[in-house]
Structures are given as structure tokens and as C-alpha cells.
Image (cartoon, rainbow, N blue to C red):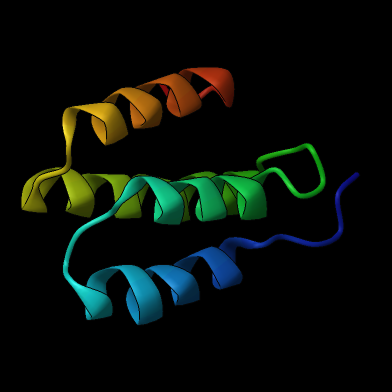
Length: 81
């Protein structure tokens, strides 16, 4: 059983770096939060909730086609789709 979630780190990074910086999610930022989520090879429910909120906000603000495709692939990979 997993005893540590990176959900808080994911949320913190999203608000301090992604949305405070330029109000958009780019490929490098997406890769970083993916690495945080997969650090222990398991994306727990708290991490999924944090990611879902980030992905929803990013979609509302607009992302490139490449970032949108990577989000869709990642969601499928970790069982969020």
C-alpha cells in the first residue's frame, strides 16, 4: 500500500509555476507533473483528483494540440479516461 501521495506537490507546482507564471500548461510543465505523479509508479486517487483539476483548468484556458494529446494519453495510461 502506498503511504505517500504527491498530490500536494502537484497542486503546489501547478499554482506556483503553471498558472501563476503564464496561465497555461506547456509540454515541459506537463512532463514535470507527470513525473511527480508517477514517482512511485502508482497514481493514487488524491493525485488523480489534483491532476483532473489541473487538466480541466488547462483545457478551459487553452493548450496546444500536442499538450492536449499528451494529456489524453496520460489520462488513459493512469486510468483517468
